[in-house]
Image (cartoon, rainbow, N blue to C red; front, side, top):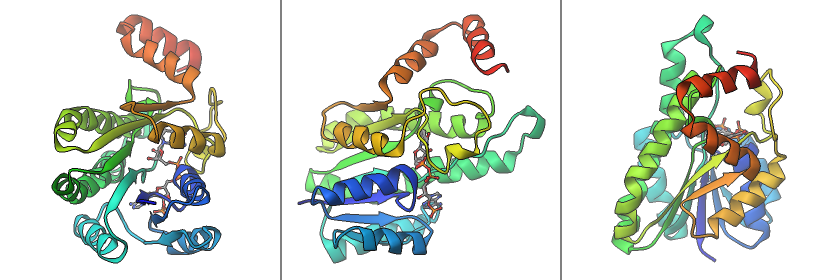
Length: 247
Ligand SMILES: NC(=O)c1ccc[n+]([C@@H]2O[C@H](COP(=O)([O-])OP(=O)(O)OC[C@H]3O[C@@H](n4cnc5c(N)ncnc54)[C@H](OP(=O)(O)O)[C@@H]3O)[C@@H](O)[C@H]2O)c1
């Protein structure tokens, strides 16, 4: 079985996916900052998960980690660039530091990994990379100014890279989840529509990874609504936002 590297594997979607792939027999290298949580995941992984603590915002450390993982375990056949976080922020508490922090983790974390992975996969003319963005990257949503901006950038980045990756023989996928019940969304103080259990999310993600689709979305009904929201003119869009969020 081919090696899968998952970032953001110490909790939530990344953790559930690591365990799911390991149960299916795939060897997994699991990265995040929390070494203790990764060690616990490794113990649950029945010998198929290797913990590899890493801060994805550290450019040099990410390059060194990719080289060391391949040195120790062979080529990374599949990388799930999932590390990310959310800090709710509105106009009342706007903070450039929060924007910078989320861009650093959500966008630059993925960029650091892509810089390390793309030349290696291109040289092999083989590889599969899935980058986790969010349906919140489609359009600006209340309290998600920093998060949505970082995820919109990730979506654009993946769209821009897709034709090149096709040419280089690399399968690039974009993952746009809706609301999934994880520590990240437990910070939200509003009722989240179509909130999905993390097990169902990891199942949908695993199914999407096996498909040829560029974009993996779940839950599908919420994604369909968000795709419609994306094409609404501003007047109708802001009216819909006001009606659904009260903001
Ligand atoms: N939950 C949702 O509803 C939802 C919806 C759309 C998109 N997403 C995206 O899905 C991904 C996973 O989110 P989740 O909901 O599973 O959240 P989560 O449970 O908070 O997991 C986030 C993961 O990212 C890791 N991480 C954060 N900063 C990192 C850093 N600097 N270096 C390395 N790892 C880092 C965390 O581990 P450490 O703290 O140990 O580093 C953790 O393993 C994120 O990109 C998120 O934006 C989630």
